Length: 218
Image (cartoon, rainbow, N blue to C red; front, side, top):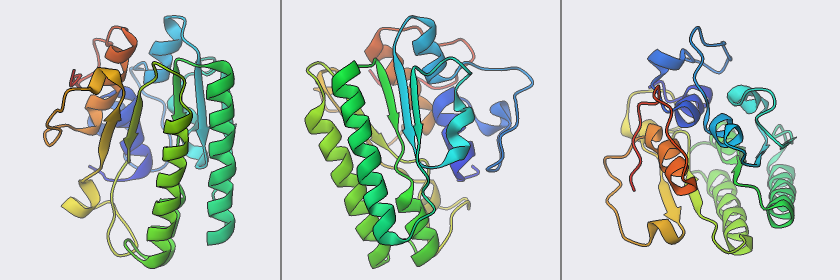
């Protein structure tokens, strides 16, 4: 909590609760005691990082210089245009991954959230946006170079035409891991969004910052 986009992404990238990173709404506030983000750590140890996203507020999740490549593409579009825009953004991510083979790439497809707000969670429009987002993820997965792993997750859920409440519909997210490090099945029910970044660092063989509160599932 709160089950809102920027606070949830801050907890994903910084592996701490909102009481620690201080982001409680969709406005970025610099931390009084800064914490390294997932991309900050990867870059610090010499990794190549990239970010593709269509919600501009996510730009502050990484320190200046921590991304080797960044592409923002607006999500404020009608349904058909929004879906096509996410296909174009996914194409750009696939091209970069296959060409540059970065160590860590973050791809955010936010149009599912837009469709939920505009038409309602589980509405036909929402399900169509979700279907397209999953098709985009599948294309990324099928294009990954040998040795890569993929994490599929979400920042929050939703109900009616909103989210942010302390209810399962808003606070339950999917977490899917694919790749050789995850060959053995694992129970993920006890995972939180804070555990994703430590897990990614372990896959990369990098140390977890002392300030992080999450744990790797590996």
